[in-house]
Each structure stands twice: as structure tokens, then as C-alpha cells.
Length: 390
Image 1 (tube, rainbow, N blue to C red):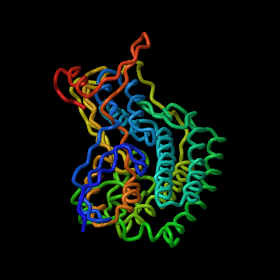
Image 2: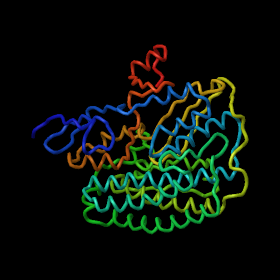
Image 3: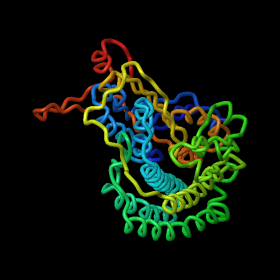
Image 4: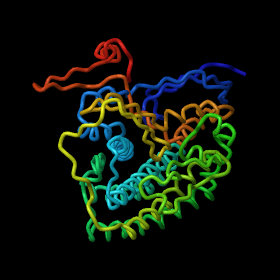
């Protein structure tokens, strides 16, 4: 059998974002993952956060990801609020949950539509993306934006919900829920989908646990791990229970995401029903100051899994912000779920991970005169006094 190395990426038709995989294959079968290079989208945000006020840092943290930016601001503001020793109003907690779960729906449907595309089922891809627009339209109505919603602020949220907003959200959820149940049947029963996903890219419960896999990838392998179980915001009152799969293959990861979307619909409904009256944010000074040296960890359950922010204060700004995203945690599983499967299965297996590589090794800085400069990794190294921070 012919044994050779197969490079995939960093630019490849099967990849949504750049990543470089070096695979050892025999014939059409993947033997092992020999190398994995990330960092093609690194923006230097962690370092940039050290030079901005607490308020400006909220907006910058949202730019880490264009798909789940609201979860980044949730984690960051939650950490800052913990350092300040404040608790946001109950109404603000409900609104944060509503926006977060809507964003989870649109993120999951984005992933699932791309999985359908990688299987060659473009009609299914377009149907899923059509229904994803329901969630996108609701998010735009609530926040005024389709991508970065800018809803979270330190001490609460920036925009309130009125009666008309609530009515339209309920109407949108009703339309979406029926479609989600239909997609579960398609991904579980359709013969074309089953041939491409059932028994493919299996991650066992033991392996998922040993590699600290997070999110739907872990829960599809029977690992009961979801930060919402810890009851932050209002999840404790909503009696949240995670969706747990059995087989740990591509099909199970897809079905878990669809069922999580259905669960998100119910969580939003419960939040709309129980949302109290009151303020949406605390009144805080324009220039926020926090005791120097104070530090904390803040975690939320993003669409891809546990999103962790380490935040340390330098007084009027962050001294250090370290972000551990779920995709970084889940890349350890890639070699295991590719091994033994066909080269043709690679796009579907990778897509079922729902990877997000929004982090390259350069950033564009614009000075006050409008002049742009592109800085590379070594430039940041010099700016940081010879110490690697980000």
C-alpha cells in the first residue's frame, strides 16, 4: 500500500478557515495526524486589551469572534463584575440569557449548514441557512446589529426589551422550533446523511474525558459537562439539563447541536415568561477603577464549549487578559477522530468539530492620521519588551 504525507491547508476548499494539517495516509486511509499548525488568523487581541480602559475592552473582546462574540463579552464582563464585587440586575441577567441562546442557535445552525455542504447536500445547506436567518433577524431586532451585537456592558446590558420585541421573538421561535425537529429526523433517518456520518469520526467517552474535550463534541460522547450546569446568570432557575449523546460520531455531534437549538428555544421562552421588571444596568462611573492586582477566572458555555477568561486588574484597565477558547481545547481530539477513516471523510469530520480559527499572527493598527501598519509576531514581541504575552 502506498504510504505518503498529505498536506491539508492552510488554504483548502474543504476548510472554512485557515489551518494546516499534515496527515500520514496509506492509500485512501488516514493513518495519523503528524502535524497541526494554527495561528493564521491571530489578531493580537489579548495584548491590545492591556492598553484599553475596562469599557473599551468590552467592545474589543467581542471582536475575538464574529460568530459568538456575545459570549466573549459575557465572559469578560462577568469577570470584571466579579472583580468589582457587583451583581447585575435580574432583568439584565434574563436579557443576557435570551441573547446568548439566540446566538447559540445561529452558531449551531451555521455549523450544521456547513456540515450539510461538506456532505454535498447543498439543498439541505440552503434550508438550514434560511432558518438560521430567523435567529439572525431576531438578534438584529434586539441589538440593532447582525454580527457584533454590543448588548453586554459592565453592570448589565445596553438595550432593553419591549412588548413588541417579546412578541416577535415568540413568533420567530415558533417558526424555528418546527424546523429544528424536522432537521433532527433528517440527520437521524435520511440514508444519504447516515452513510456520511454514522460510525464516522468516533470519539469515545474515555478519550473525550482524558483529552478534556468540551462542548457538543464532549456531550456527544456521553460526557456530562456544561458550564450552564453551574447556574450562572439565570440558568439555575431555568432548571437547565444538558443534551447528552451516546455514540460520539459525526452524526451524534450533529444531532446534539440540533437538540441544543431546540433546548435554547425553550430556555428563551422560559426567560421571556419570567423576565422581571426593573433596571437593565447598574449606574457606574464613566472611568471604572478596580484594585490593582485583583484577578479572577470567568467561564461561560459558548456554542463550541467552555470559554474561559482570566482577568487581572491594573487599576483603570486590564493588566492581563488570557482567553482559553473551546476550539483550542478540542483540537487535541482531531488526530483521534481522523485516524482510520477515508480522506473523503476529512471535511465532514473536521466540520463536525465546529472549529473556529479566528486568531492569526498579525494585526492592522491605524494611527490618528489614518496610516495603516501591519505588525507581525516579532513586532509584538518587541512591543512587549521581549516577553511573549499573547
